[in-house]
Every structure is written in structure tokens, then in C-alpha cells.
Length: 615
Image 1 (spheres, rainbow, N blue to C red):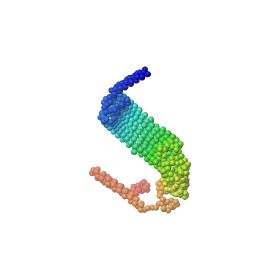
Image 2 (image 1 turned 45 degrees about the horizontal axis):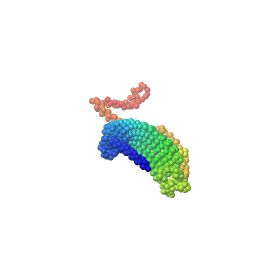
Image 3 (image 1 turned 45 degrees about the vertical axis):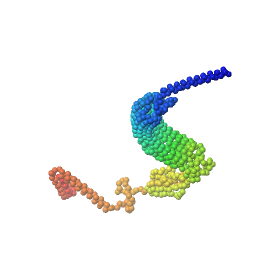
Image 4 (image 1 turned 120 degrees about the horizontal axis):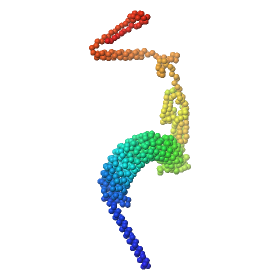
């Protein structure tokens, strides 16, 4: 027992000695580390993370004596105004530098020279007005640059030419009015660019041509009024384009998106008044489309078929009143449709290429009329994701306030019903009219839902709402300045989801009789109708003495006025030629004299005449 006791005592002593050695080693290492890490006053240093945090201590300049091994340096929320030449050259291991929320007004050339390991640089919320060329010299490995919320007015040529490794660049909320054509030269690795909240009124197309591998471009709160043709066509690798909060942007020209291979396009909080069908036709790789918060009222049929790969379509709060039949025809991969907070009364299955591909539908906050047009959607309700906001019946009196999830499968066919259209006034409309008149055919109908009225011409083609023959907003058909070839049978067709009804009307146009020949008018002219009697089919024109006398008087007055003006002009012209005597000789040659002088030449006679000479 005593031997065992001594053995345990020896073990405890050995263990105690080992712990003392380890403790002394740890203390020695700590002392050595603290000796090497001389943390600047008011800063907090984390030796394990190699971090120096000097945020919010009101430094006026960058502090000296920063640890050389530091990898993270936080100087945000201070009052630093200037970065000097080679300001951080001793921090050769620095990876992340934060100078945001200072009073920076000047960055000297080569301020960051020596910090070649730097990966991220944040200079946001300062007072920079310009960045000199060469300010970022030496930052050959920088991947992220944030200069947002400054007062920068212009980007000069080659400002960022030293940042060959830069991948993410945000210059949002500056006062940029111009970006020089070579400003982005050297940014050969840039993946994402944010130009938000600036004073730019046009896309800096020439500058953007330098960004050959750009994948994401953000325009936010710019003064754009339109997106011109070929604005971005050099950005062949661009995948995401976001344009938002540009209230003056009303149009996208037809080739504005030409050359792009976008997979995601967002144009929201702008002033588009319609879906930009023509520009979108180029985007055959588009997967995501968001046109929310625009003044778009219709999605027309059969105009989005070029977006073969589209999977998500968002059109929230857009004043949408109708999604036409065939609106999404050709979109065989459409999985999500979000049309929340609009003015839709229904969403028909005929709008889709296939309802089987749909997985999510946003339809809440619409004045929905729950009738047979929505029966397909309610039957799929248990297999659809409504985003936690299932639609509600609003305009149906019987079902007002009902939630889509409140219906049971058995009651759907009896509750969601429609009434077939019926044309009210079926009185025969058979119109016979002379050529050149205007004819209106009327057609009114009833049904539930309210039927839409269209017209077919005699060739059984739909009549449009524009042109000489057109449909009116009240359902009528107007034929203006009728011609003989307009004759025939027209059909009024009233349609809704429950079926249709039709009504034929007839139009007979009498042509003008052939016009008679008139030898008194030039060829190609036609005489006005007259009530004067005719002789042998030829129209007689009355002789008007008064008109003839007025015309003759006007002619004589004009003639004598011209002669008088000529004599007055000759008189004053001759007076300016010096002392020249003018002689006027008037000779009268009687008829008999003329006859006697020519007696030897036959019996020809000449009339008497006056001869006047002015010398």
C-alpha cells in the first residue's frame, strides 16, 4: 500500500511539472506575439485573425506603426482626408482594407503601391470628386473595389488600368456625368459593374466595350429616357442586366438588346407602357424576366414565343387588365408567373403553352371573378405554390371573399359556371347604299362573363379596329366611304368562355353611273352635276353675260396698266441719259396707197395701218 501511494505521488509530481512547462511555453509565445504586434492606440487587434480594427476613433490621418503582418485593417468612420504616396507600403500581407465613412478628398498617385496582396478595397461614403490616373497602381490582385456614395463627376481615361484582376466594381450614388471612352481600359477580369444613382442620361456604350467578360450590369436611378439600338452589343458574355428606378425610361428601341445572351433581365420601376416585344425577341437564352412596376396594361397574344427558355415571368403592380389568349404560347418551360397586385379579373388556361409546367402562380390582390375561366386553376390549386398568398374571389357576388383553398373538389363545377353569349337584337340588317356613304352595323350581346364582340368580313377574316372598315369600342362595325367591292355578308361574333353566338348582316353598294363625255373640259376633268336640261344626251352649259363682261373688264384693265407702267419706266430711264432730244413720228398708211404701190404684183391688198417711231 505504501509503495502504491508513493507511485501515485510520483505521477502527480510529474504531471504538475509538465503543466508548468507547457504554461511557461504558452506565456513565452504570447509575450513574443504581443511584442511583435504593437497595436496602435485606440485600436483593437486580434492576433489570431491578424486583424486591426481602428473604426470610429476619429483618426485624422492613417495611424503609424501598424503591424506588418496584418491582413485586415478597418479604418472606417474616422476623419481621414488624404491618402499619401505609398501610404500602406509596409503592409505587404494586407488582404482587406476598409476606408469607408471618412472625409477623403484626395488620393495621391500610387497611394497603394506596395500593397500588392490587397483583395478588397472599400472607399464608400467619402468626399472624393475625382480619382487621379495611377491612384490604384500596384493593386495587381485587387478583386473588389467600392467607391460608391462619393461626389465623383467623371472617370478619366485609364483610371482603372492597373486593376487587371478586379472582378466586382461598384460606383453607385456618385455625381457621374461622363465616363471617358477609355476609362475602363485594363479591367480585363471584371465580372459585375454597378452604375447606380448617377447623373448619366445615356448608356456609356464606348466605355463598356472594354469590359469583354462582364457578366452583370446594374443601372439604378439613372436619367435614361430610352435604351438606344446596339447599346450593349459588345458585351457578349453579359448574363444579367438590371435597370430599375429610371422614371424617364419609356422605350427600348428594337435592337437595343441586340447581340446579348442574357439569362436574366430586370426592368422595373420605370415608365414602360407595354411589354417590349421587339427588343425581347433577340433574347433566346433568357430564363428570368421581371417587368414589374411599369404601366403595362396588356400581355398580347403570340408575341413572346421567341423566349424559348423562359422559366420565370414577373409583372407585379403593373396596371395589368388582360392577359390575352396565347400570351405565353411557345414558352414550354414556364414554371413561375407572378402577376400580383394588378387589375386582372381572370387568368385563362388558353394563355399558356401548357399549364402542366406551372409550379408557382402569384395572383393575389387582383379583382378576380371566380367563374368557369378559373376552373382549371382551382383544380390545380393543391399542386401550385401561391407564395403563401392564395388568390381571393372579389367581383363575384355569390363567391365574394372566398379563398382559393376554401373550395372543395365536389362543389367546383356547380359554383364556377359561365353563361353562353346571346346577341340581343337579331333584327335583319340588310343595307343598300350608294357608293361613298358611311354605314354602321350594330351588335350588342349579353352573357357571363361579358362576351367580347368581333366582326368577320365577307372573306371570313377578322376586322381590326383601324382602317376604313373597322370595329368600334361599343361592338359596332363601321364601313366608311363604301365601295362596290365592300358588298357582301359580314358576321358579328360574340364570344366568352362558355361559347359564342353570331349574327349575319348584309351590305349592297350601288356604284356611280359612268360619267358622260364633255368636250368643253380638259381630258381627265369631270363636270359638276347640273340641273340644266340636256339635248341628245349632251349637257348644255348656260351663257352668263355678266360673268363675261367682268372677265373682259379685268383683262383690259390689266393690259392698260402694264402698258402704262412700261411707258413710265421708259420715260424715267431716258431722262437719265443726258440731253437727248426725243422725237415721236406717227405715220398713217391708208389702204388705197398700199394697193396702188403694189399694183404690179397682183391683186393682193393690205389693210391700212399706223406706224409709230420713238427716237
